[in-house]
Length: 261
Image (tube, rainbow, N blue to C red):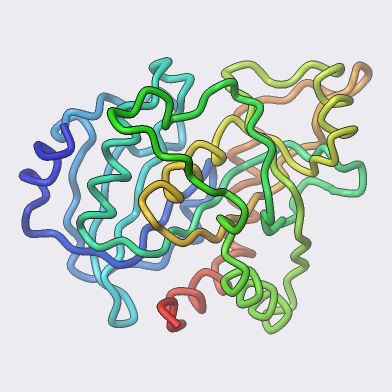
């Protein structure tokens, strides 16, 4: 499958990948010379989630070759093989740095809807590791997967643009259900700050293929407790759009930076 993807994308190159979570589309600067590939034509399936385009978009911005990646969720098909093949193909097309975003529930009680969090570590609670069953097993280190220099850059840029940005620990659950009150309490005892149905699997794949990672979480809602309000996907998209606008100048400056330094 990876070779088939590469044949379909044979004339493409990119050094930076962007995986935009629910509602984050508003943060994306306009690319020059866009080339768009649907996941259906690439054999990756049709997206099942509102707010995700199911497309790869290649283009140029600030003198850099960029690819915008629509996220494939584990809960959409119950496996990670297609996503693994996609990230492997992107690494072979030259992607060295991945900027990830995700819409999340705030597990840390101090976080409010609309807050922006810089992910510094994760707890994978999805029950899935995308590297299980590889033809040749490799024990991939995740100790430094959230690149320290990129996190330092993100904090500097947030300060420049007067955007509140705090570092935190993220957890991925499998979805597509939101967390139970008991699960929220468990995550809180684990020191988790944000939770969503994505991102940890993405990061593991980036580590496998030697791609540097910087990841951001928008807090769309407070993770529900027994007497809390019910969460809706529409709410997640709405708040994500607002956080995306706040994130836009930071992303723009990240793309202008020398990410290979």
